Every structure is written in structure tokens, then in C-alpha cells.
Image (cartoon, rainbow, N blue to C red; front, side, top):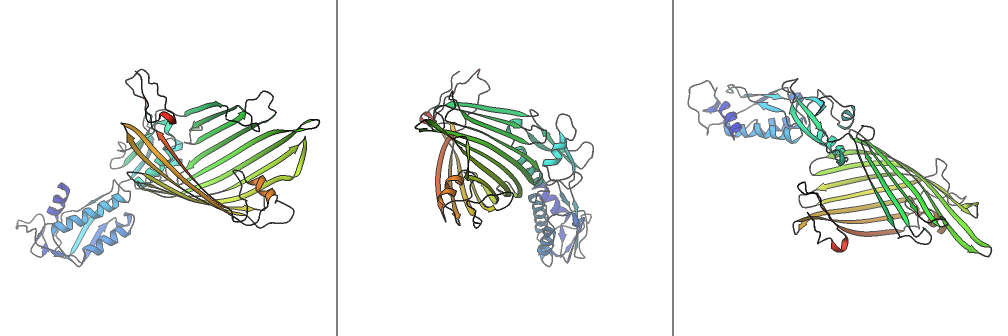
Length: 460
């Protein structure tokens, strides 16, 4: 309100012409003036440029009071801030506009760079994740994109702030504070949920490393195998993922190796049936749009999967497969104060390249798969305890030719084949609790399983 009053005072009018602030004549707020021209110094720096065009169109040719002129100037500055240029300013110098010309000054806010909070230096990794270069106009939207990458590393405890640059007056600097350089987490699980074909007892462990190469990257490794002593029937697998961001982009590579061994009784004892599978995935994602409400990402990649079968230590040629396909997907996440809604669509298309082996020697048409998924996350509180509900609806459609052998051998996780025009819809819902440790307690023992999720206690 103070700024609006000052602008109105500078542009106060007397009669039907703009009066100079240095004149001693009385000012009448109800007086108006007609502007025929608007001059904005450094207008070429206003982004997006249509904001200045709309401003000029709205105020020229109309009889406006000083109050209306002040509101128009403030609306232009607010629109510039909404576009992300939060440190830019628009000033109104003292002037006499009786000739119908209004002069404004656009003062852009520049970014000096990204610096570490403690050391004060510029880390190489920060220039990789933030798309805006130093010495350009500070755009908070680009900063939000960099923070979206940093939010993928919650273990580092990263915080970003926009501060005045003491080394360059008038400019701003974005300081990054983090609690640690890298974060390591893991889990170990042992259960007896297996079957005779996978081994009755299973062990799984997960290892996650955040910022392993100081490039704000992520590494994930997951292993799983049976614990039977003779390993006559069981599974063994390892899966790894690596993600590295670069401004609007994110590159990911994933690989997996799996083995499954079964024994079938025969007259002379048993016959081993052994399956070995390998997979390699390369993907590239591009952030199309990011705001406090919407997050839109486009992705594409290529994958290769191999499968080998051995029966009684002799390889079987017919079930052997080598599949290659490319995929493209679009994901949109919508943030609402009451919930988060996300939907994504992915299309897969097989390729007869890179050594791909078809189902039989006869050539089949390229197979196609369309997958769609929607996710709804609703947070709520119950008895003072924060919970959230996550509902997922997933469906896919397979098209083109395939036979039973193809379906049996390639209908796993990485398959793009299936029965002609097959489809599937799978709903799922989860209810989880968000627990936090209390800092003023020596320890807190919380046991929260599904049967007791609504009644969890903490002990001092």
C-alpha cells in the first residue's frame, strides 16, 4: 500500500494533464490524463516480452487517474515477479506527462552465481543442476528446477536461499547449505515367503548412496537371493540404477542380472532347469514445465533384454530370447493443498535391431504396448498422527502378433509382447504413517504394522 501511494504521488495529475511533482498546484485524485506513448527504458530485458506489450496496450488511449496508473505499474511488476524474476523492479521517475508520454525504468535483478553456504565457493556440481548461468537475470523458476533435483537427495539436508551479493551490490547470490556431502542408507530383510521354486527362505538388501561423485547424483543397488543350503531350487538377482541430473535433463542407466534354478524329479534322480536373464536400460528425461502447482516431464529410452534357458546342463535354443525396444513417456504431477495427483503415459515399441531375436524364424510385426498410470496421494491426520493414502490405477494394452511361447518367455517385467490386443487394469491402495523422532526424548520405540497402524505408541 505504501508503494502504491508513492507511485500515485509521483504520477499525480492536475486537470487533464499529468502534473510535475515539483509543481505547487493542488492535486486532484479524480483527474485523469490520456497517454499516447509509453517509454520503458531497458524494455528489451523484460521477460516474457508480451508483458510490456500488454501493459502499453492497456494504458494507452484511455483516461486514467494517478491511482489507476499506479495500479497498472504495480500489476506489471507483479507479472514480472510471477514469471520468476523476483528481484526485478520497475521505477517511475518524477516527470510531467502533459505531452501524453509516460516514462518507466526497468531495473533487472542479476544473479552472481551459486555458492556454498559454508565455504563461499562455487561447487562444480551446482552449475550442472541449475539451468541458469551466472551474470544473467535471476529467475526463480530456474532455481526451483535445480531444487527439484536437490529434493531427490533428502539425506543431504539441502537448503537454498536468495541473498544480496556482498561482492556485487545490486546483484543476488543463491547460497546452498547442506548437512553432509553424501548420504548412505540401506536395509536388510529376511523372510520365509518363498516357494519351492524360489527357495523357502529369502534374503534381500538395498543400498542407496546420494551424491556419490559429488555431482548430486544417485546410486541404488538391490540384491535378492534364496538362503537354502544346497541352492538346488532358488533365485538370485541384482539390480542397479544410477541417475545424474543436468539442468533441464536427467540421465539414468539401469542394469539387472537374474538367475532361477528349479529341479524336476525323473526316473534317475532330478533334472536341473536353469534360467538366466539380463537387462540394460538407458533413459533420458527432460523437464518441460515446473511450477509450484504443475510438474511435467518427457522421457525416452531404449532397453535390451536377454533370456537363456538350460535343461540338464544343455542349452535350449527355442526359448532363448533377445528383445530390444524403445519407449517414450509423459508424466504430469499436480500439487493441490489437499492432495497430489499424478498421471503418466508410456509407449513401448520393439525393434529388430541390436541383435534382437524374434519368437520364431519368421518375421513378426513390431510389437507395441501402451501403459497408463494414475496416482492419488491424500495426506490426513488421525488422532494427531500424520497419515497419507496412496491409490494407484495402472493399465496396459498390448497389440500385434504373439504366440504362447512368446508370451511365456517374454511376459516378464521388461516384456513388450503379449497376446494380440491383450489388456489389463490393476488398482492398488496403500495407507502409511509418517513417523518423526522427537528430539527431546532419549529414545522412542515405535512399532507400527498394518494391524496396529492406527494405534502406535512412543515410550520415553
